[in-house]
Length: 513
Image (tube, rainbow, N blue to C red; front, side, top):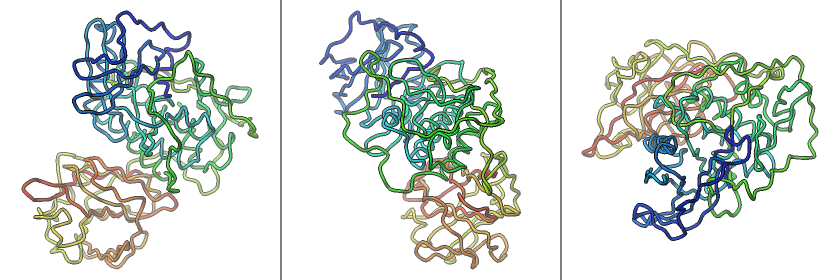
C-alpha cells in the first residue's frame, strides 16, 4: 500500500529487480525470519516481504535487496541507525543482515494504511491532518535529537495504523540531506493531508497528484484548494514550504501543530486492511485520481517564488533522498485579523521569573535554591524533588509539585519544552493571565477535580496530560489567547529503583510568537 522510495530515484522507469537466488515462500532467513508473502517491489529494486519471526512469534516486514555488500551499505547503515532510536512514532527496526549475495532489513509490521492511500479518497479534516503532521514532527524531533536526519519523508513513508498510531518509516543513509529538509517535508506532508495534493511533481504511476499552481507556477494555499482550513494552520503550512522563511526546530513545530490536533475522537484510520505493504507495486497500481469538483481560486497576488538553495551541510544523517521537498513554496495570503504573526522565538527566562509549586499539603522545603537551574540553559544542572517512597504519586502524601513561570507580560505561547533527567513522569501545562499572590519562592496549589488554583488564581489545563513522558516533553501552548503565567504541574514521579520515586528538571524552554 505504501510507496516508500518513489521520489527522486523514480524519475524514470523503476530499476529492474534483481532476483538471482531470490527466496521462496517458506524460506527462513538467518534461521529466524520465515518469508510468508512477497508483497511488492519499490522503485529502488528492493523486495518487500511479509514474514514471521519464528523465535518471538510476531509478524515482521522484510526488506530484501540483491546484491548485498557495498551496494547495500546505505540501506543497512540507515537500518542500524534507526534501530537505536525507540519512539512511538517511528517504525521499529529489529535486524539488518548482509549475506554478501543479498542483504535484508527486518522491521515492524504495521496493520493500517499510508497517508498516500488515505488522501487518494480525498483530503483529511484539518484536525486529523494536524494530528498526523504533529506525530511525524515528534518522530523527527527524536531523530534530530541524535544529530541525524530522516531524509525520506513523503506520503508513502507516513503510516497510519488501524488503531490510529502514526509512524514514520524507511529512513535512508545519505550525507546529502539536512535537518531543514526534514522540516520542509513535514510542511509538504501537512499540505498533502489538507489538500490531497503533493506540492511537488512526482514521477511514477502511483504518485499523489501534483499541487495546483497559478500561471506563474506559484503554489495554491490549502485554503484556496478547499474550505474549512483554519487560517493559522494554512499559514503554518505555507511558511514551512517557503524557503525564504526560516523553519522552527522539530520540537517547536510539535508544539505549534499541537494547537490544531484532533479533538473529535474519531479514529485516524477506518476500514479493513491486511497490513502495511511497505511499497506500492509500480507495475500494478493505478495513478491516484486527481480530486474533482472543487472550486479553486488561483491567482495569488504578490507571491515570490524563490528557489531553494541547496546548501548541503556535512550533517550526519539517517537517510538519503525520498520525495523531494518542493522548491516553490511561495508566499502566503495575507493573515486574517487577529491571527498570530511573526517568527517563533525562545523566550529568555531569568531565575526571578520561576517559582516552585507545591501542594498546599507540602512542606515547602524542596531545594528552593536550585529552581534557577531550570532556566539556566545548562542541561547538566538539575532541580530535583525529594525522594518519595512506595508510590509514584508523591508517596500519596500530596497531589503534586511543579514550576510556575511569569513571562513578564501576556504572550502567545507556542510550546513549552521540558527536559527531564529520567523518563516516566506524568505532567500537564496550565495557564492563566490572573496573577497569583506573591508568597516568595514557593506558590501553593489547591486542586479539586480538574480545577487547579495557585495562590487563589485559577489555572486552566492546556491540551492533554502527558503520561509516562520521556526525557524530552513538548507541551503545546494555549491555542487561542495570550497568557502571562504558565504552570508545569507534575502528578507522577519517575522510578529511581528500590521503591523510590523522584523527578529532576534539567531545563525548561518557552517558545513564543
